[in-house]
Amino acid sequence: MKVNGIVSEAAKCSVLRVVGVAGLMFALAACQTGGGSGFAEEGIGYREARFAEITALRGYRSCAEEAQALDVKARETRSPARYLASARLIERCETELGMGGAGLAPEERMRNYALAVHNYVRGGDLKRARETFERFQTAFPKQDLYYTDGSSFVDTTRALLGQANDQEMARFSMLNISSALKAEMNRISHWTNN
Image (cartoon, rainbow, N blue to C red; front, side, top):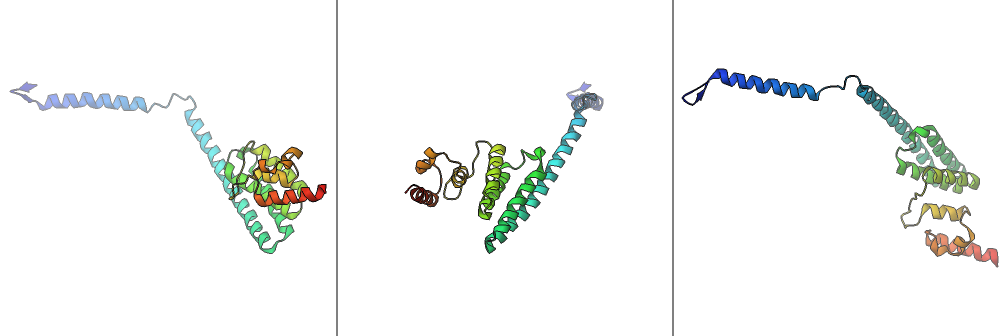
């Protein structure tokens, strides 16, 4: 009640109670779980799937680190056997990741695939290099990596593995490959035809 412009304590408490009850009702309405519609189950399933992805990616990265360390040793010793071992290990890493990991870390996986292709070439196994390159193109369609000089991994690999058609080979300038590789391909082409 209001007496001479002063609100009584009882009136203040009544207003506070009404506001408090209304606030509590809004808060409880916002916290409703959906009556068993499966939201909690989806959350748990999502977390389990996410945990499985993280575990798979950790395993992949650990495996890839081993393969990269083997690649470093192969470069130091210039050992074809170590290049081949590194390439095989990278392929095993990819296989262990499985189809469930197809969308995980695509850039990292592309770089590792490229390393495997190059290591098969360095190790002298061109058949496996072609097969691995085909898997790269299947796993990452219409995607490419670029070397520090700006040349294309896909174009360079196609030229090295003889997968570029005759018209492309005749027009090296149209391929996005390094100038050193263009010069070497022109030299080979010249001596093959003359």
